[in-house]
Each structure stands twice: as structure tokens, then as C-alpha cells.
Length: 97
Image 1 (spheres, rainbow, N blue to C red):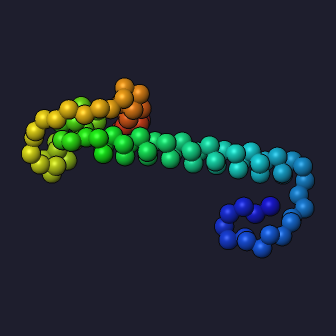
Image 2: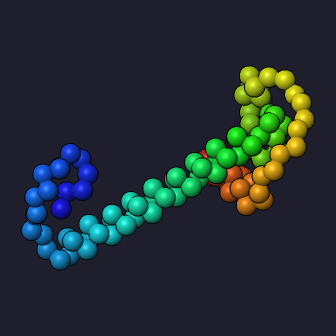
């Protein structure tokens, strides 16, 4: 039954059917959450990697003035970022704010 937390003995633990269903539901939810976090992180890293300048980032993410100052000079560049990635990033940062 133990899945995480250091239980690697491979022992079998007898549990009720209800407990097994709850455990399986938790494991499925945990895996779905992991995939969601992984996908969001991948989208963010793809965006940051594709961004050539601070302006590229500022078009999508409204950074505070003090952060902008720390990021340095201003220049221009063209990048290819999908509209879907932009909308997901905007939604993520809107939720975080």
C-alpha cells in the first residue's frame, strides 16, 4: 500500500476495498497534478528560451518596475511563440498575482 515516503520493502498490506479505491484515486490525482506542473514548467521554459529581450517577456508578463530595472538594457527582437503558450502564460501569471 505505501507508495511514497521511504517504504520500499515491497510488502503487501491488506486494506479494505474502500481504502484501495481512495488510494487509487489519490495516486491518479497525484499523477495528473504532476503532468500539469510539468507541462506548465515546460511552456514557461520554452517561452523564456525563445525570448531574446526583456521586451519579449514584458509583452506577455507584466513585471514590476524594480524587476525591469534589474534586467537591464532595452532592445528589440522577433521571436516565434505560439498563441496558445502566450495565453497559458498570461493565465498562469494572472492567477499568481
